Length: 119
Image (cartoon, rainbow, N blue to C red; front, side, top):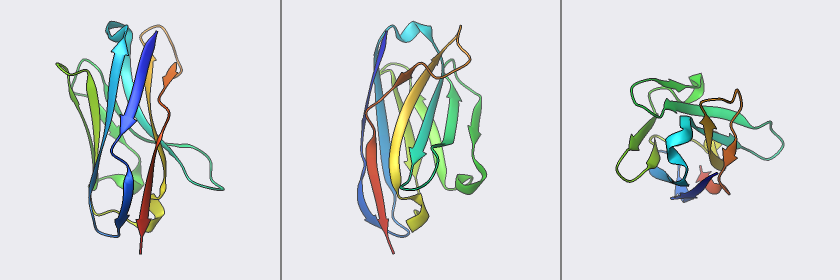
């Protein structure tokens, strides 16, 4: 089992920045990919950014490229999502998730953290 705890959300104005954190505990050695997702009211959950746990490979959805950065601290077992140049359309609950090496899906999810961007 892997436990994930997010933090760092809040209410900001358009153009501001936030850094979300996702602390992983438990069987972190089983993690293959980490991802950040978001769910806005009335919209489907979407994948925002992913990172290969061993390092190097990252992916971003088009709407956040150049503004968001996913990174990790392997000592702290923590994944970060730096959100810059925030827009009102970035408002959502942000979740981190972990995918184990033997799975095709994200197996473990955090509780979510609210990001609200006012115009």
